[in-house]
Length: 140
Image 1: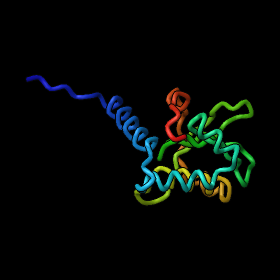
Image 2: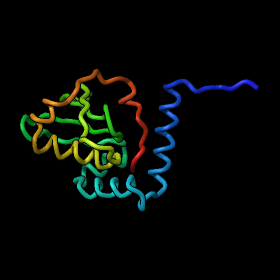
Image 3: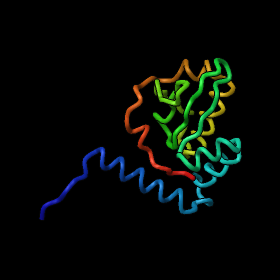
Image 4: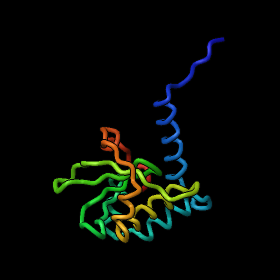
């Protein structure tokens, strides 16, 4: 019998979709669900609306006043955006440890708002791709 193997990109998309379904359908008793609940509690009303509608929220850097967009995800999910709202530069920085996605996103929010320059020092840069624009509304 022939076996089929998903390509790496399809495997990643499938894993993200499974994770999204898990998160959307009430995993409040799990670390993922609790971390997302905590994140929602820390978001401003405007950020909460953005996150619910678009799957990302924006923060203003505490040191430079630049605007950043934090997408749903645990890595390569932060972009600096220009005055027209277009992602200009991707940033990858995460806290140490294997943390749930909500905790990672909350730590990124706090780092950018409170110690932006230090976060930028450790961040790896990448070019934002179409993938960043096409993310679905994973975590309402």
